[in-house]
Image (tube, rainbow, N blue to C red; front, side, top):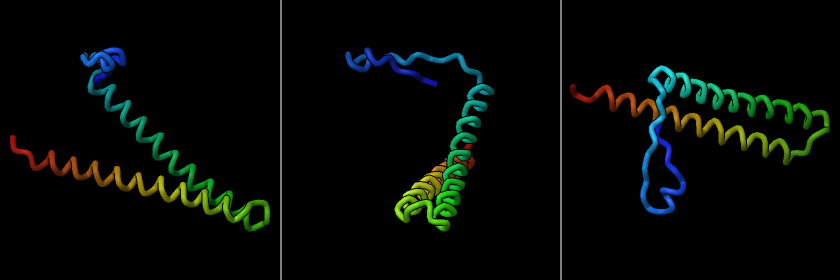
Length: 98
């Protein structure tokens, strides 16, 4: 992973600093990030169900339901877009000649 020093960016000289992460550590880090993102999408879906249940018993406003549903829809849409990009990248790698 490459990190940039903000002072170097401000002065116009960008000097990347290499982290000493092994491929296994990078893979684990990405897997952890992906799991957290998917857990967040699942949590938003569960929130929609909770708000919907509250609406049915009269404890929530229709606006709360619509906002929760919109947030969950956007998260799911983003997840689908990321999945599509990952699949495209994988297919492009598989088409490369060695």
